[in-house]
Image (cartoon, rainbow, N blue to C red; front, side, top):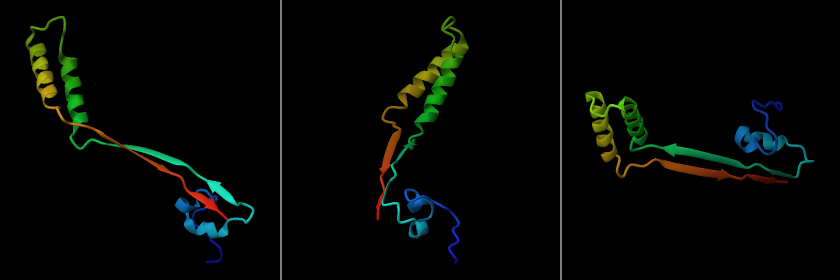
Length: 103
């Protein structure tokens, strides 16, 4: 296609941006190293919603007036939510990518 490239890339990023650009790299470059790191989290048990719900109940609780019906309801909500989170977890995944290109 007459040397047309949709995405340009240097020698280190070519495998991701446009692998075909590896054929167009100048011969003066003989080594390239690119390191990538990634982290992601998964909340399959919906623990974050439980934490948000607990925080909202805590905001309704008045420690200066614990016998107030609103405070008592908030305390009940917090207790119920705490007992329901046993065994729930948030999974953290990490990845490392180190492509090396040598000519």
